[in-house]
Length: 142
Image (tube, rainbow, N blue to C red; front, side, top):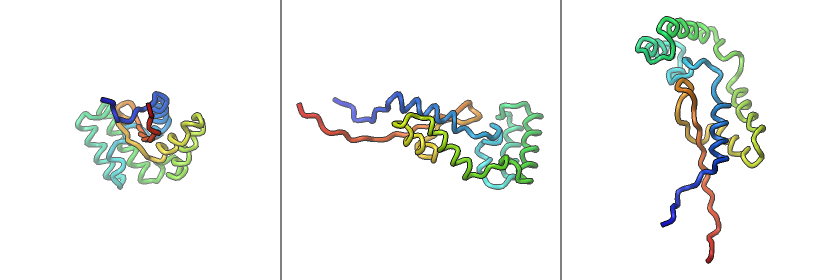
């Protein structure tokens, strides 16, 4: 019996892995955790502090707590983003796709805009992004 599952080309997988590395956020790994998306700087601080105290951080406890406090102070001052807007970051992600071969550029741009699935974390060592595109071919006649 013939498999009907989509076949991913090695080129697309390589593109996904390369794009994942290029799209990694420039923020510190400890600040890029789930709590950073929860809203307020205080909520993020509480999340990061709990990670420090529970030993789930990649840093020793004292350094982790110091970094979490420093990130909170910078967020309150509005300086955690290094002066770069979300729009600029999005434009940069898409612009990096210009280095890809023309045949892969559209898929790269789609992934840069958030399409596809993401597995892994920056803190865990990297993210793998995957974008599956189904193509229907013409039936073969024998």
